[in-house]
Image (tube, rainbow, N blue to C red; front, side):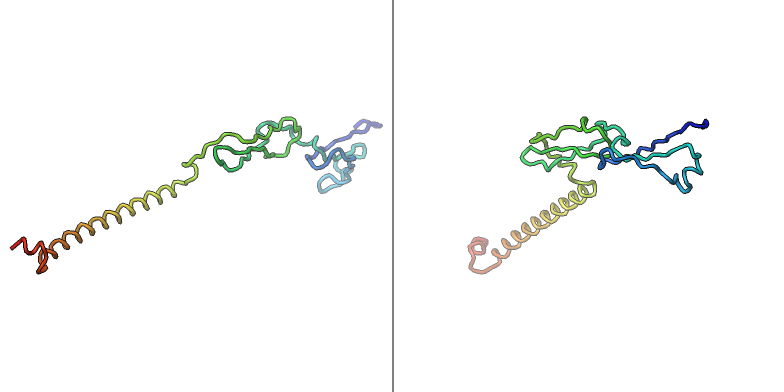
Amino acid sequence: TDEGRWETHVHLVCNLARELPPPEILQTCGDLPCVARTGACVRHVLVESPLGCPVCTHASFVEIGTVCRLGKRDVSYQMAQECSGWTIRPADKKAQECTLKWRAMFAPADIAALCLLAGMALLVAGLLYQRYRLYKHLYSKYRQMRPGSADARGAG
């Protein structure tokens, strides 16, 4: 720098919790003293405030919704990344219309397992029906062979 002139480097750090604190003059810049790094006429000032944060956009917020009950749900928006400028934050929505997406509730492995289970249930039902029909057939033959039954008298 020119003799008699001072230079100031302002370092803004994003910190949403602090309003406008007093600036802090840095003595060390990394692992070296600031004087050794940039000279005696340069001051490094650190300011932690929301001014150091990027400006909020619609993409800075993520939609958080409650469970869909009776076709209604509440929706609020939470900050997904640190930013400043709360005027852009979308308004919360109460009793928003919703539909339950059944397909989204199941992973492909869940659907495959349900199909396998349904197939096994059909197989067991078919086997039980076949055994019932065989029982009815054998029972009718037994009744024909039993002495004194109506079926045995009519056959003779």
